Length: 423
Image (cartoon, rainbow, N blue to C red; front, side):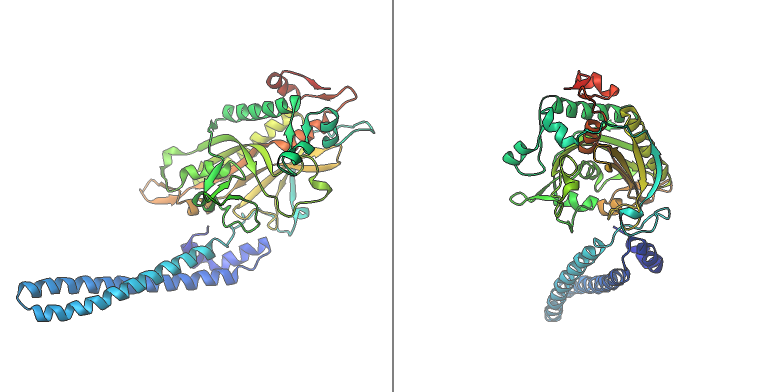
């Protein structure tokens, strides 16, 4: 959420910056300023009314002590009217504040200056590429056919149990999943991230804190009876650890990693590009989350990018990194790098990680602050990244490592899963 003071001081600059997202933010920002002025005016009226009421209450007490009951009762009638005014102004103030907050929630984060202009994913900027794309036999199969051939993932059984997008992993497929999770967590903890286990459901305040709510795209699974939400990523519960927290500068950097299943409705997703593991409603992911001093958050972002690189190098998967354009940038992000693995059997790139800096946007929603060297409260910066999301990593391994003898296991994973080939 953008800070009110920043909107007051830099409205025109924000309108220009948000054009990079292909939106005209002028009406929203103007509405914010009008509601803010109304809120401040109402607050002033309420403060004056309460002050006058308090003043009269003291006068009434003095009149009663002086035996001037008749004059005191006259003033009591006046204070009754002031109490009614106070209640009316208080209700008006609360309604205006809620309306203001609702409008602020509709304004996305400001893109970093390095974010390229563009409308769609076709305008994303490739900033790095590494790895050789393997040459497969002419009869090479996509991962959903390999999963069926070797009986390691059962998509039809998942449909029977729950529905499309909920696969069942079997035998060596399940063990390979477990191996990837353990490997990712080990890599992250070796890099200085503290492992944490968090709930898989969150309350509404947590959803608003990290920007998943209000859910404009209908991606969240809502448990209506308890008013809880299934998490779309571990980012939500992990980052919300710091909701309404004031840190010290000496606390930085704060680095967490955690494994969770993730749940996304993926409303409107259909077609050949979502076959198999390409797009799921439930999937496993290992996340890294950082809370940083504003002066070091972009150095931390670069460090996270380098960390994900090391994992993909060890898995020996061909990958590229994209800096997302304004039109493809997530609502809460100031800058995002997407990692994509090349699926040789599908002849296409598959996104397997997003690494983002939210700057102070989430922190403002969360009221996540730190005391600077002068003892003044400042907003921290938050970052998160997939390290890694399993479905498309697994798809890339199955397709790129397939041979006539079976599917070889990346060397780095063999100690984790206990076998070197799926056949």
